Image (cartoon, rainbow, N blue to C red; front, side):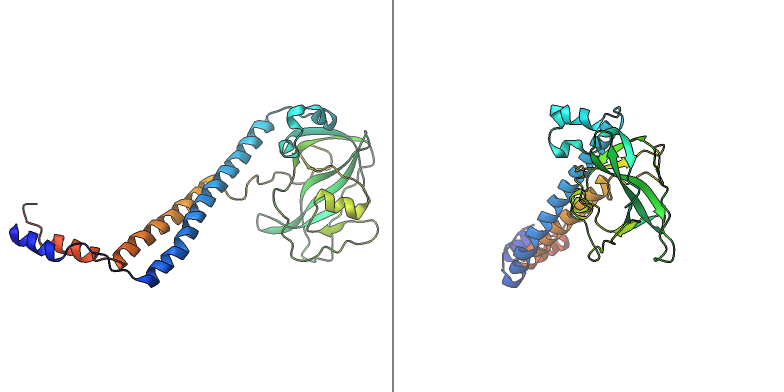
Amino acid sequence: MSDLNSQLQKISFQWHWNWKILLFVALFLPVLVYLAFWQVSRADEKQQLLEIYDQRGIDKPITLSELSELSELSEPADQLYVRVKVAGKYDNRSPLLLDNRVRRGRPGYEVISPFQTTEGQWLLVNRGWIEASLDRRVLPEIKEFTEQIVLAGYLYQSPGKQVMLGEDLWAVGSGPKVVQNAASDKVSEKLGKVFYDYHLRLEADSPGAYETGWIIVNVLPGKHTGYAVQWAALALALIILSIFANSNLGAVIRCLRENKSPSE
């Protein structure tokens, strides 16, 4: 035991700083920690969206006028996923084909039609997905409705900025228009009408509906949590490796292993 103690005294734990490694750790450790916490916050956001969707999905649909009268829904963000019903007519002159919408590996469009309610309010109605032709010049025929109808669905507004592959070239005149950005303010500017801030995503049994059903969140909360664990594990590994690289900890551990008695 005395030999072990004397050897441990000779190989006592010591720091020997490597400034290049310390600089590397100082630069990348905060990034890894930030990414871990960011993924945790994203998981919380996605979980909240799913809970709001589930809670409001069981409510009975209300009219837009009733919605505006509810004090608790006065803030625009509070209207997300609220179920509504509207009566009025489709404007068949300028249906929008929201481009780059893929389902089951097939390219297509989401059909968005202007709709005027009986109260005179304009609303953009997302009627669902329709498959695109292999020839991009051939646009799908959009079913027209001229009579007054009642629609039901939920309100939706994109939470982030629309990613675009290029500037939309709005065709002049009537007929379908292929666009990448169908935000209400953008369409209001192009069509010269003031549209409601939120789109109405149709229920499957509403008149004019195509293939409905939308992904509520593109990445589930559990996957964000998994990413957070990965970033945290990388941060921990970086700390441990930096300790080994800036000390003689490895030599101390080897010494302890080599001098460990068989009885232990």
